[in-house]
Image 1 (cartoon, rainbow, N blue to C red):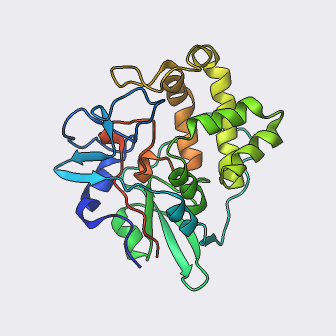
Image 2 (cartoon, helix red, strand yellow):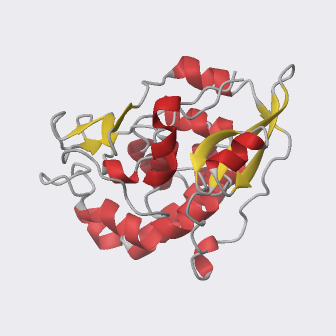
Image 3 (cartoon, rainbow, N blue to C red):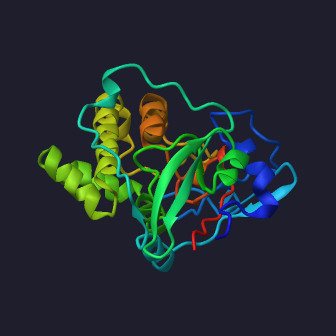
Length: 266
């Protein structure tokens, strides 16, 4: 069983947890991601490589093969459904600095596993776990949900389409599940979409066809509003994000917010 954090960047992984700890020193102003036509940035402005604290990290280019391999694993204790709007109260407190979510194989023969939150990378490994993302575990921490992030470098358009095309909550969640999300993860994406729709309607209507980024690299007004208004609750409930998982996407982020992980669970 191989450790998910690449040995060369293990020390950096917990130093780059974005909201949880102080940001590491990163070289240059290039953002982390895989820009596409909708990103609005050039490859000179955004790419899948970061160098922080002197340790370079290039995110692997995942695809269907890697995603399909993750789907051969089964979580033995699935998460409960998110049936109540988590935006109805105060945002949960962020996880303590250094916290990680680890995958613990139960049986390699039938590929079953559990998820557990640990106070550090070392604690997770000592307990027999493989770190799968920084921060505490949540409803999107499963390997099935990681497979969706691997399969779709750009989730903005398919998730937005689910919100625009669905007639009711059940159809909206079913649309998200059709992308591959587990039911609880699809539900937090649904609640996130509803909250952003209420809190950010005007800037999101104005930016409906706009690139994800402005020319200076900042997010457009809709995505920035979603980050400010909906981000904290989503991160706390979902657990996994692309940034804390080391997966490059079409939405580019500062290297100081990216956790350099390579995902190997066989």
